[in-house]
Length: 185
Image (cartoon, one colour):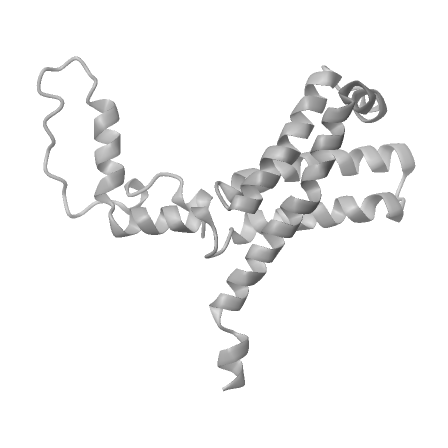
């Protein structure tokens, strides 16, 4: 009885929801702080690493934190957003180690964001996400993805290309919805 209460999947999905929303909500302001004074951020954090185009990379870091945070909060293309955050946190951890050594006070917040993003990349967004809804829509109606593909490819030069061919019942799963494994588990 107790094992069925503690191991229901809804608790796991709520945990993914909380992890996504709190990681995104707490990280998003770091991206906006970078945008407040982008040149100062470039001078303080990017130029000491001797990376090319420091201002451009600073904008990229801010965009990955803001955009990635929104993607985590909404649960849309969640693994893509978490991957963007993971890349930014990797560079930030490298910067902290190069400039200050293994200073736990500088590394702890970066490591927590890194671990959260890494967990989301590996485990997916959970059931309470836009990715899950998209996956369920295309799973219940797989012909939607194929008909959307055919509508886009029907603009070819052949005169009978807009006539829809019957869809075979034996389709490979990878053709139902591209990148479904990337969007959610």
